[in-house]
Image 1 (cartoon, rainbow, N blue to C red):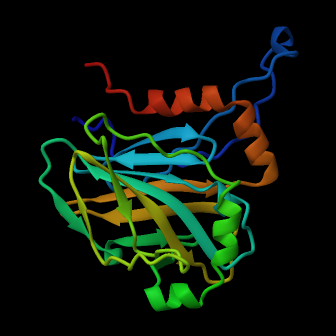
Image 2 (cartoon, rainbow, N blue to C red; image 1 turned 90 degrees about the vertical axis):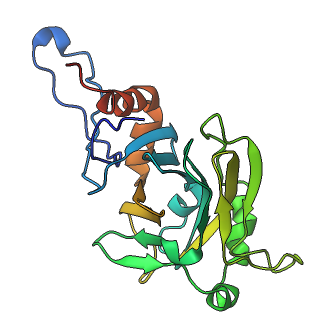
Length: 236
């Protein structure tokens, strides 16, 4: 697979520009998206208002963050996450140490230990997640076998936490990640950073204000097309 640009996207909805002529006075221009640089070569896609994916030649990561967007001011951030490795990439074992969250301002936060997670107030988050969530079942065609990411099993289940997950191109691994955010969740740009063997995939997502969410939802198809067009290979 050839990467089209060494960028990742973070959707930031801008207000429509004013009309350029009287003939356009009654028309609204399509909203635009800002494209910040991730610093690593990858492609990003939007699969829903609160669903983002990013991938490179080695790894693929998708996340759903509707609950996080409904948790502004709270200390714990929950992400629903899926991942796999790409075709012809050897099986790879990934551990919690290879995940981190970059918050507005640039601070990088590691995943908490199981002990810290168990002491945190996460039970209410999981109850809310039942209604504040989106499907993230969007994977490359080869990833058709179910796989669980169980770094943090539910406290009322017998499952033991696992400190590693084996990824392969045929496995679609799904699970939850938790991060303890200093000062609480704020509006702005976040990145889920995942270190694979030879590269890093950074999945951008934005905690949207109410106005940003309304504008994105209203213009979702146009914004998604802009994202797709931004990563089309350039014609020679």
